[in-house]
Image (tube, rainbow, N blue to C red):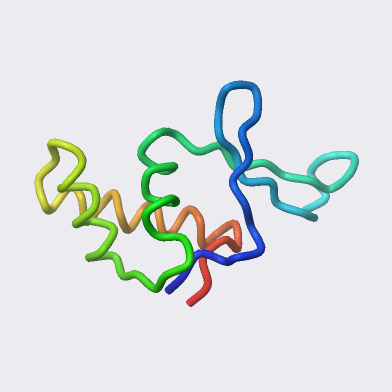
Length: 90
């Protein structure tokens, strides 16, 4: 899988977000996905390359004090959340 290249991270109000077009949830149809520091780290490491759940989990265990099982669960959740927004392509 891969992060879609047409989505970009923007800095906004001291945080980092991905602006998603469409959706109809606001007046202009724009939605925003906020990234915490670990999500931003993963985005920066994985953009423009193919990755698996195992790749994401490895990045998490290398950067944070987290066991492999927790990292796999967190990686799966991160991918599922971005996939639900159409940000990850298979």
